[in-house]
Length: 266
Ligand SMILES: Nc1ncnc2c1ncn2[C@@H]1O[C@H](COP(=O)(O)OP(=O)(O)OP(=O)(O)O)[C@@H](O)[C@H]1O
Ligand SMILES: [Mg+2]
Image (tube, rainbow, N blue to C red; front, side):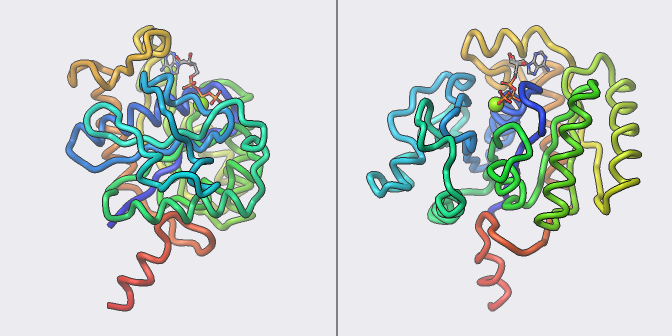
């Protein structure tokens, strides 16, 4: 059964795209059929981190100019990738119906997908919340700054109150140690669960890493380097934690939604 994961944060620049790309590569490296969707429509940049040069974008499929398989681009380790397109003004403020249409069009890829990872845009706008609400597992990227805590809180609040999303996986990025990452999680968890009826799981952490920073400049993700690098060990652990976390089961517009209804009927 295809599983969907969304990576979001609220705050921009905290590492959503780096984590989406490398989490996808870690899963693909384990032999899972993985598709990465750059859901930052109009401001997409996952292709830069991957070092890919997509010729077709999700907009082409939405406009009926390409099939979903034509917008799939090859990425390392056998991963597939769908670009959200850049510099397309009409994509920046995609209306709700088009966003939902994009979520439904991903259904066409169900047979060839084990894991779908969506890299959500920053902010707690309708656009990011609709992707958060569409996924089975929600990864929230947190860094140890009050602004990140506040924005992650706003995102979780919006997703839980508007769409009834209950379960969130917290990944702490750019931490100095496991202990520091755990402390950030505990502090954030205490505040969030005091005010919201949500369940947060600590799903791992990543160090502040010169290698991660340089990877963007070199357009070569760390997920292509040795599996025993600390960053790649961390991505393996995060992948296991996220896939083992409680799945969100609320209603609404969900990735691969009718699969459940179909399998329930058999
Ligand atoms: N663990 C890390 N250590 C050091 N630098 C990092 C780490 N994770 C991400 N970065 C750097 O932080 C910057 C922002 O990362 P990234 O683009 O992944 O964030 P983002 O949340 O997707 O941003 P946006 O909100 O603009 O989409 C990049 O320059 C990246 O190299
Ligand atoms: Mg990004």
